[in-house]
Length: 130
Image (cartoon, rainbow, N blue to C red; front, side):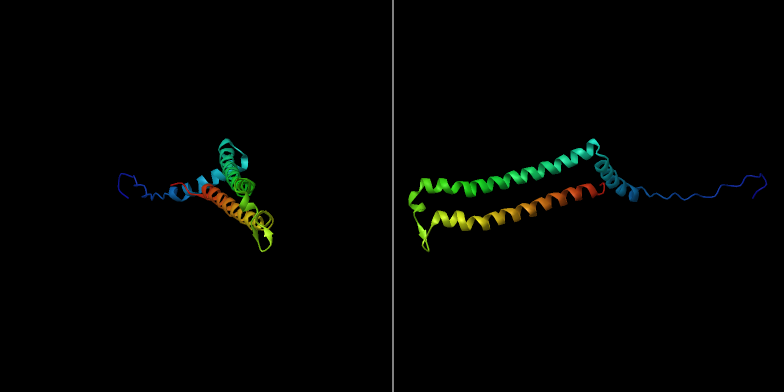
């Protein structure tokens, strides 16, 4: 303290928490946009729905070609349609027995890929800003 009467102000330390808050605010903002159904939130949800629809259509096409193609195959190659395996005609065997494991496999693939789409969506919503 000097004789002029002015005391120098104490040194201030500046603490910046911007990096921490910036990461949380983007994820929170995206979740809020989803909850409040803003245009951004609707666009994100529309993207997820579009991805799920595209997946369903692709796998439906696999089923249509896989099972719907069998009658065409037997029409084009009639001798194949008259083939027997263990006393059962091949068309009956393919449509009556082999179609069920095929449909189960397609269903399993759909569930797995749909869950991956949902996980990608969740990761997008919760991803911190870079």
